Amino acid sequence: MPDILIVYYSRTGNVAQLARLVARGVEEVPGMRARLRSVPPVAPVTEIAAAPVPDEGAPYATPADLRECAGIILGSPTRFGNMAAPLKHFLDSTGAEWASGALVGKPAAAFTSTGTTHGGQEATLLAMLLPLLHHGTLIVGLPFTEAALNATRAGGTPYGASHVAGTSGDRAIGEEAKILARALGRRVATIAAKLIA
Ligand SMILES: Cc1cc2nc3c(=O)[nH]c(=O)nc-3n(C[C@H](O)[C@H](O)[C@H](O)COP(=O)(O)O)c2cc1C
Image (tube, rainbow, N blue to C red):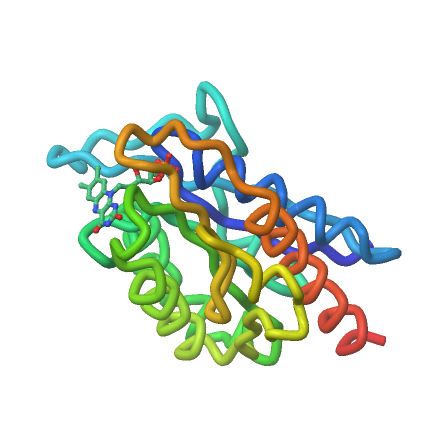
């Protein structure tokens, strides 16, 4: 069964929640399966390798995940209008997969969570799409034919799925943002299914 790889970093759980919604959307497409993977945190002392299996959350992504997937969706908290360092660190380790064209022609998308409404969601989503372009993926966003995109007062953008978690990080994901996160997963999986048919 073809897998859509969802690779995310989440420190306080909001992006992890979005990842599970995106995964639900993927699995709404007959014959498609979500493969949820996280990336380890980075520390100033980088000589100490992280354990291969995290204490909680999804297993860490590996190069094999990139080779085997039929599509890829990246998720990260917004940090200073950009993706968080752990996801960037993981992407910076994908030179061999770039060189071999492991992701060329596969559909790809992104999702994020911020503390504030205008805290840089689109900038972060676009930042995640840049390495995906270098990898030769086919960028997938959310069209305004998704009614929730017009209705949302918080999360959800044409550039990808999103959530405004609030400055305390404890705001629940709104209905529209949930719908749009699932729609993103469904859209990537639908396109992947057509491409491999
Ligand atoms: C170092 C740092 C930088 C951040 N920068 C931003 C930012 O630029 N804009 C914003 O709205 N929120 C910012 N935040 C808040 C996070 O994006 C927000 O808490 C997010 O929901 C965390 O996702 P998580 O729960 O998956 O870890 C920042 C948080 C940290 C720790």
